[in-house]
Length: 317
Ligand code: SF4
Ligand code: ZN
Ligand code: ZN
Image (tube, rainbow, N blue to C red; front, side, top):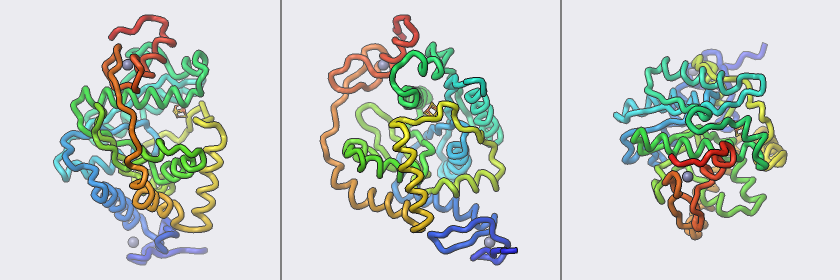
């Protein structure tokens, strides 16, 4: 039996952290993980000026973990919290959205956090399953657009000044390499741990920016956080298979070169992104239908345009 001992206390270890040359027991791992998130929040001044924080919770491991850790941090800082969950209407015979929402609610109630559930079908007249059939674009692109729009809108309605999302280190590493691969300088310039409030958008933060997926999964499991295991039945992602291959390759690189993802992401953030920070950003207009920010030269935002296609009724709210 290959029993490993915690590098801090000699108890039985539950996880190996190769890039830090450590083995950690349950208690020291929890401390390690929470410290990492807290240090990330401090390092990038994520909560500077924040009074009310909205947290996007899908019910998956990343967002439920985010909710648990940020609730603790916000309490210490005297910051109010509101959870936002969208029922996207993804069913496909698997009740995916219904189950996800249930998991989100379990966490809100466990923590005593205030929350809002937005039912896409009831409030906006369509589901993501319907969008998949009726709209030519890849379903994940419509879904992403919908989530960004609703989170922004509801966070503002709840008078939150900051919105936190559960993007983890593996996600960010994947965006960095995909951005280089596609030569997509605009996406790279926008890929930040903190996007300040500007152009009518509220401040967005990614507190799990430097937290590897494996550690998030381990944290959720050892803390007994309820989350949905199933992955979305609309399996393919924006950009097709290439992005998935890039992600798997990055994870293989991490196995071969421990610390690869952290170096890739922190070097991007500290050395390269400042060089492209000043590329001109498009000026924004206001959507004629909903008043939310829209790209220059467009009268109607992409969400309202999509919604009109899907609901056939004239949208005028
Ligand atoms: Fe939406 Fe695609 Fe994610 Fe499913 S996999 S939740 S459709 S973005
Ligand atoms: Zn220990
Ligand atoms: Zn609009």
